[in-house]
Structure formats: C-alpha cells, structure tokens
Image 1 (cartoon, rainbow, N blue to C red):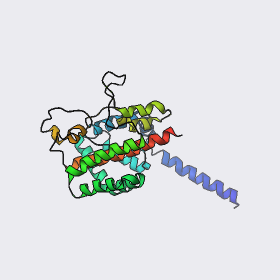
Image 2: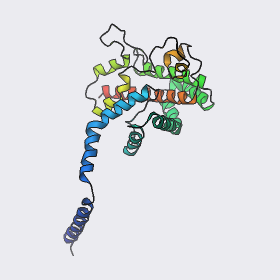
Image 3: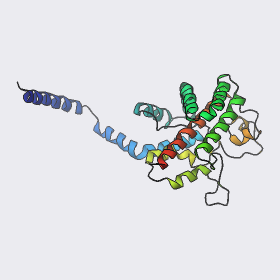
Length: 250
C-alpha cells in the first residue's frame, strides 16, 4: 500500500472515530458555554472584580495560562463572599514569593521597601506591613504614571466627580479589548478601600481602608487577611498600570 492510500485509510478511520465521538457531545451545551464566554463572562468578571475590590481584594486575570484563568474564574465568579475570601487568601499566599520577586525585579529602586514589607508580613507584623504595602502601591503608581495618584479622586464639582484619578489614564488609550476593560475596571470606579470615613465604628476600623490607616484613624487594621489584601493591591497596581503603559505605546 502506497503512502497516499495509507493516508486515506487512516483518514477514513479517523473520520469514523470522530463521528462516534461527536455523537457523544452535547453541542447545545457547548454552544451555550461559548455564548457565555464571549457575551456574559466579561460583565461577570467586571462585577466580581468590583465586589472583591470593595472588600479589599484585587485580582489580575490577564497574565495566566488558560487553565489558570479558568481556575480563577471558577473560584470567583458567582461564588459567596466566604468562598471568594478563602480563595483569594490561598491564591496570594501560594504566589507570594513570585509577587515579591517580580516587584523587586520591576522596581529595583524600591527593592529595600519591597523586601521590608514582605519581611514584616512573614513575621506577622501586620501593623507595619499594611501601611508599607499601601505606600508601595502608591509609589509604584507614581513611578509608572507620574502625577496620577492611585488613591486620588476628582473633586466633587468636576466632570468626573468622585471618580479616581486613574480613570484619566484611559482617556488617551483606545482599542482595549472587552476582557481588558473588564479586568481593569477597578481603576475606573471608586471603592471602599479609598473612601473617606469620618468617625469610624469599631467594625470599620478593622477594614483595609487607606484613609483610616494612613491618617492614623484606625488601630484595628493589623490582621493577616488585610496584609494579604494589601499585597493583592500592590500586585494589581503593578500589573494593571504596566499593562496600560504597554497598551499606550503600541
């Protein structure tokens, strides 16, 4: 049997096997899943990112492989706050060494600041690690986008009243894909992390709130979970602003 006939026989066998396999697939379910991924998932990612942000968590989806993306999506989209908090705590702890290494590499001038913040976290000195991470996130933001503070807001009488100054970055960038805009949404809306709280309650003093912590109006923020949240903030600031810088240059 010549090579061509062998190829055709093999192709015929493959065709029969494929036909049998195709008959076992629920193609409507596949179609519905694809419709969801294209049309609805970006909105769900955006909505969950905002919910997470308002509890102090920040998540970056875009630098992962598809299996890792699916893992994050399945762990966060449509899940309860408790399930999300548990996943985010585990996710940050599992990747903490990689985060520290990447931040030291990306910002060599801040290497000591990065290392001291992580040392404080590993030592359980959360009243020191949290404000250092908050300051580090702001410093990274100013390094990548001078003049735009990541915690700064527009004045109440401006056209962008109450919105974060980071929303201005998007004014000069076009062509972002729908998934990009969904993942980057936390840069464009106000959050409970940055809101100004006067006369905080005991419960509010336990929150990861930049205003309360950096202005000395909280004495109860020093928890491991808040430190992990602050790490997620630093990493998100780094990845999102770096992504926007690259998008602006293409």
